[in-house]
Length: 442
Image (cartoon, rainbow, N blue to C red; front, side):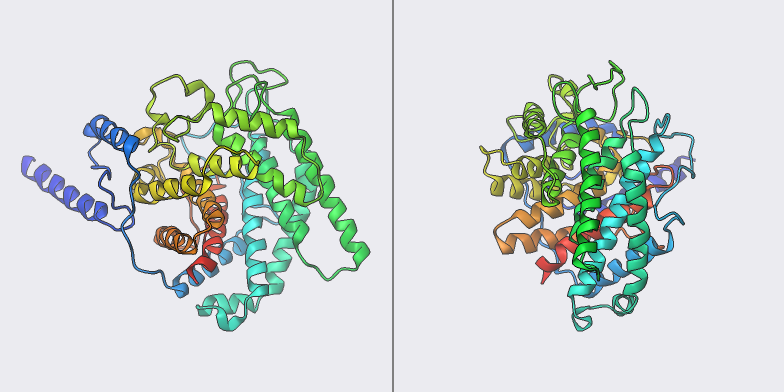
């Protein structure tokens, strides 16, 4: 028994050493893999974060053929698994530990999931329309380009579902507001629908755009109704259960909403500036002097590990993007983006430990699995804001390399088992990430 245990421990040690040595996760503060020393590892990382930003090790340039092949496989997955009504995801595939979902919670899940999957297909359609087949570096993607009509029909079904479902999306119960995710991602995808070129007359196109504007207005009205008393947004209100949420705002939820306000304006819909100002103030209240962001306002005055920089790796990107796009001055955003992208890539191992764990916040630093592709998604938009093309190329290469290595056999990506929504929102986020990064790799 002792001999077998010793052999097992030796094998596990070798496997972990090989993983930690990978250039995709390498960092002098990489996790040790031994949960018994988590406390000391956390303290070491916290101390190191205060005075220094890590720089990820260089990796080989990703081949465009590998990226294009992954895009083709991910797109095929979404086309193959779309629901008959045009949406993606179902409340099935349950497990013993499920996320709390009372009332119409699944309407919020499905709206957010469908918006992200549809966003990816809209980006794929635009990419294939604007790119010559000769510039595609994979045969599968070239074959997919010949099926543009099939992709367009899938998008049409998704758009029809969006027009019907989003205006009906509401808060599911007094204590749960998952609908905020659907409203936010819905507005972002509606803007892509607004910009989509179609073979319509000028009158028909204007009628379509007015229909989109009406849908955007409905989502803004709901976001205004679900704004927290102190400004910003959350997705739980266990404390007050009032008509107006009185619980703590969460910086990443608030940032997710603020980021899409420019999309609403691009559609010709005015956004109440009161919402913007109060949202900015909410995020700033959750920002620490070291540039990290608290999980929520209720954790700001605590010493909880969820507030540490390693835990904020996926929150910082969207918070910076929200402040920047909202016009907040006072930060050197080029430096902030660069510092947090370096942190994100060099310490991706802390997020990787939590990926696919079924219990939220059970990993070190209380990292939840569903922050994994969320972080990559917003990191890709931050890269697009960088002025230095060499830095854009470096960060894009890292993000693509990480995501290519995690594609599932069926072509999907997923990070957290959420009923039957995870492979669709995960695939949608990663496809957007890859396509955002592709031009920088050129």
